[in-house]
Image (cartoon, rainbow, N blue to C red):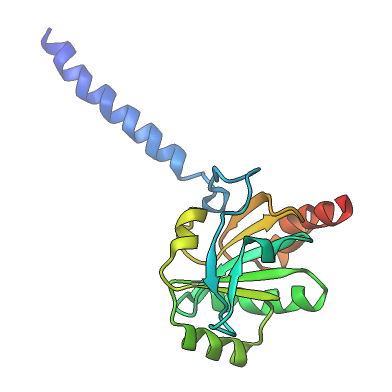
Amino acid sequence: MKRLILLVPLLLFLGVALFLYRGLFLDPSELPSALIGKPFPEFDLARVDEPGQRLNRSNLLGKPALVNVWATWCISCRVEHPVLNQLAQLGVNIYGVNYKDDNAAAQKWLKEFHNPYQLNISDAQGSLGLDLGVYGAPETFLIDAKGIIRHKFVGVIDERVWREQLAPLYQALVDEQ
């Protein structure tokens, strides 16, 4: 009986250790999203560039797009931004969600680093981010022309990520039209 009592903590420890060890090999950019295959959430928020104008879900419809969640306080967003500018120059449709940020700072950022976004939503309170299940910035959603979320990518979009992961998915959505 004493051996059994001593064996239980050892088995529990080994189980927890195995679970944690498995976590070392998971890719954090592959966070599952319950929104894949569902419509982009409804929202009614101001534009970053024209705060007096409102945007809603219908503004995102009509063609496939990347919806990029970004912020001026996000160091990784600064790394990602030049790639987004390049993609926009190539004709990739990109919408921005400025997440939990100061609108004046966002406007200054876009003037300084250029604006790759066809539309840029000001989500100062983080309500749209909450509806999207955003953990932080940058996060990017790929939506089809009907506004259905087809893919979620967490982290910096660099040239390799675009070429190997997102470009084929984006092109498939463009070809569907």
